[in-house]
Image: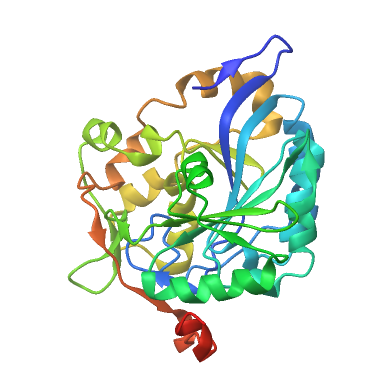
Length: 310
């Protein structure tokens, strides 16, 4: 729930900065549609002046930077430091863990502390066959000696595994190899489509609603990720839906900073309520094992001694 603080700013307990549609993995039923050829990323330096204005209106609790694969955004370090400086909070970068050694300055960015708390990297492992790859990358990334699997730290993060290094950098890993149904699917004509469900039913069972996954995307505040991404995905892939539904998916108005004085209070008061676009989302949220592949046919290879546990 978003509340108004004594300083006149709204406190948003958790904010997800979605910064790229691009991902190097294709995970079936990705709820932000990155398993398809979804392109586009956001440059911190283009948007920083907008977020500087937002900092006068909102305070942020937990902050997560995600995508897509956020480490594929070429301005990822600018995002980390920019959010640190602008909102005065530490950040979590949520990654699939396959590219942590490809980003210059990432380790140093994690060493930075805000009010005594480090920025941190969280890894979502979508296929246990990838775990050996992730562990190999972490062994290269972290500073020895590295401690693996502290039960207390696992409990702290609700994680399956936790790696901690000599400098106190801690990386939790969550095994998330089961997804629920995505809003986007291929229909009988082989074209992308959206669901047609009862608005209130879809809203009542929505994980984004349950977890209050508010999003900052392109400098605007959104109720959730899908409603922000539907129009962008349609522009790239042309949903096989009616003209009326195309108009509806574009009818949602996020909150822009220059509208804050006129509609900010109403938007925030209503942010947890259903919206007409909820009908495009699934009502079946049964977890199912997913398939994961590397895009462009790229496979992951790691030294045989790592595979053998030596």
